[in-house]
Length: 313
Length: 302
Image 1 (cartoon, one colour):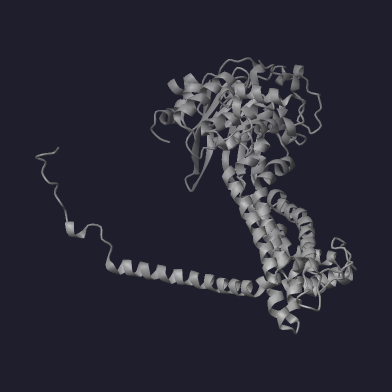
Image 2 (image 1 turned 120 degrees about the vertical axis):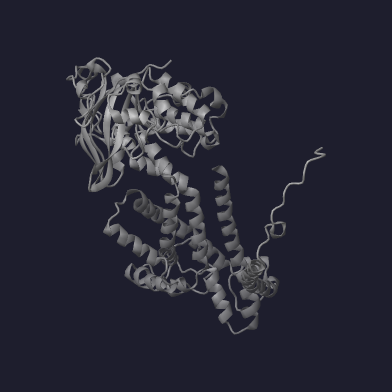
């Protein structure tokens, strides 16, 4: 139905879209860093999924985020794999939402937020000086906690992205394709000119997912996309994620462990730790990351086990 | 149905949910005092309106609207004032909208929060409270003399612009601030630049509230007498002046009312002045209604 052209479109993130980094160079092998998926604070890595090195979309090394002088997240090292759903779980305040915002440089928009460490997206440092965060956000889409359609028609919601990115596309086609992909077409095809606010919450969230698809991203970040939805709407979104996984790399932050278990291929567990005895500021750390089945059935870290068995959080 | 059901036990039946007597009295008394306050304000307004309508309605006629001023009360009219007021309104709107919305967009969407922008904000808020006559003096010294615009329509419009600009900026900023943060996030997440988000999402979403603020500010501007009186409005304009010529002398309805009241003849002081007030109030009411209609239509859409 839709020819994915993400790999053809791998261009540098500079404002002038240089075509220097061709698809070929991006597919070159990655140093095998998967073993270091957890940092030293985690006891040890669970057996990582044995994807080929090409499958690494994001290579995150020693990332810390501070808001002002307060650390929010410290020393996270992991990889995100292509066309997999990776779930970030953990108790409130563990920095998982902060972390997901690093992947499309949304933290740049928060005054005082400081991101240290390195995030490579297909071997390109996302935080390099010449990287344009606007271009990053076009290639790495995001869906938010609360459905946030624009107060405009459904149609206009879906053409905004292609318009601001000056994509030479047929808008009618983009609207239909993205709505079909988001499993919303049949429900709204007769009322594309109606205000998006007239949709139900679950439909609005699917519209937001469709909207993210209109600019043809490779990655979709979802920050607790179902937290404002009822169980039926949630299950729609989860089905949709499973479907989208075939073409997109998805990272999802969720409070809902069952959801992580249901939809994700890999799960990263974060926790909020007290810095030291005499300083009770909390900040997030990655405890472990691994195949979801492993994390839920046989976690290697005691804290993960306690959390998923409901002993805290 | 429940033939043999025993009566439910009643506990303390005498104290069932009654408020203490003192509370009830205090409640009613306070409400009464508040009601009287409201009625007093309304009564003053009503008396004023009735008085003006009774005095002025006889003077209203088509000639009154289309004639220029005359020495004779029965022949006088406020054509110059109406055209002047309308020209002022259009010019002030043209000047205020880009300046006010631009300043608001900058302060709300782009400016960094630092000492400099805080100083700017404080000053704008203070300017909104400066007495209007001060703006008249500003208009006289800056527009009439320094910039050499003379006592022209342009000077009057610029003076009134300076007067309402702070209010428009404050109202526009509130309107922009009321646009949910999520809408900006959604735009940015699609790879739109902050500028594109500001102009294509945030500003359009805020426009109805901004328009409401604009119209209310304009109706304040055209009701003002003191600033344009100081900045060179004339009492009556020659008939051969084009009302849209910005470099010519101008007058406005409040200025003409002031002129009528100052004249020695009783007919001018009461009948003609009241008739002019009715015209001015009608224009103001129409503008405020427009503001309310815009606000309601916007409220229904969301």
